[in-house]
Image 1 (cartoon, rainbow, N blue to C red):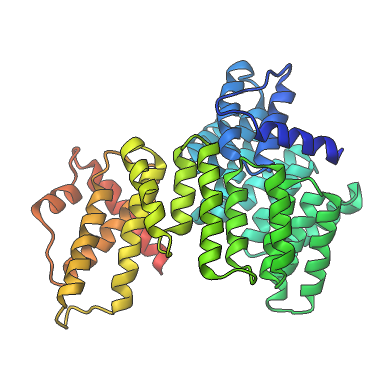
Image 2: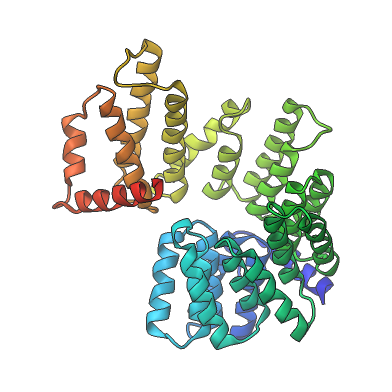
Amino acid sequence: MYRRAAAAVLALSLLAPGTVAAQNSAQEAADEVRTLVRALDPHTAYRIGEKSLHQFPDSAQLRAWWITAGARAGREAESLKAARAFVDSFPEQGWAWFALAATELEALDLRSGAVNSSARAMDALGTHPDVVRLHSRAMLFSGRPDEAITIIEKAAAESGPVPGLLQIQASAEFAISRNDPSYLERAIATARSAIDLGRDEVDVIVGAAEMLQRAGEPTVAVELFARAERLAPRSISVRQAVWSGNRRRDDLTADQKLAVILEDAEQLIAMHERAPAALYSAWRELDGTAASDHVEPFAEEILSEYPDSREAEGVLVGRYRALGRQLRSAGLSPDQPISDTHLETLRRYREALNAFLSRPSFHRPVFIGDAYQNLFQVSELGIPPSDKELLRCCGRDGGARADESSHHVSRSRDRAR
């Protein structure tokens, strides 16, 4: 079974962008999207799922996996909206609650809600392995690893071991090991069992490898990442895991590590025909390193060719946050004179904040409050806001921007507490 699954993953991963394999049933269409999500290729899964829904609009399972793919591909806001509409329209449909829980797990400030949503999915769908895995992940991400293990062990007693559940159990045991070191060896053993049982399941391999890497086994992790890359060569998430593993390699110098990552990133970008998601993943990985000059053109390409994309928004957020970190490390104070060098950094910081806030629309509005809060902090250093900045804060569109910014500033402050 696992070998057939691997062949399906590899075939789907090699599909050209925009290609959709013909499906004879809604179940086949749902399985295709699920396979790509579990192969950590949500961008392809989302694109294929969107097209398949035109053919099978009434398939709850297909819709759930399509929404899940969108959330994991960075479309958090629209996926959350779609999931909530799904639940509102079909409150007794377990797959609707599955979609909502999967989407909530991708938003840090909504993860606590995923526990209840995934529980509702289990009430409707029973011990379906995908649903049990989602519920146990929700428990783990909510800081309840012991409960996650209980859920998984109960499912294993009823249906036998499942690789995906063992991988979550290993992560839960590793979380407990931080306070109880006796759990560390148990976590490593469980991770190895998950890998042995699910040798061709990409998300199992990557999840277990990441845990083993944190547990002090980087060499094993690099080998597992390479296996995942062979199974899902188009997956941006897998490539990012590979890059993370390469950063921890002991057999390469710092320059060699960056060279290996940059070469792999170039291959990924070419494979995705310079799609913004691939460009952004490479820029985000290497920006701020000795390879920054090599990837800055990727950021500029995103901003010029895809100005309305979520990746362009991510570049602008990344830029102002990097400058903000520089200023915080300098320890500037309103009571002390500011050097010319720091004044120049403040000027660039202010420009970066305004570049983000000047966008006509936002994919992740939560950053609006973050940016305004930082802009206000600049004014506290003795640099008052311009008339244009004040007008924007007061709302360009009948006060709508003012309401939105006020709401998100409050949320930013709440999180800071």
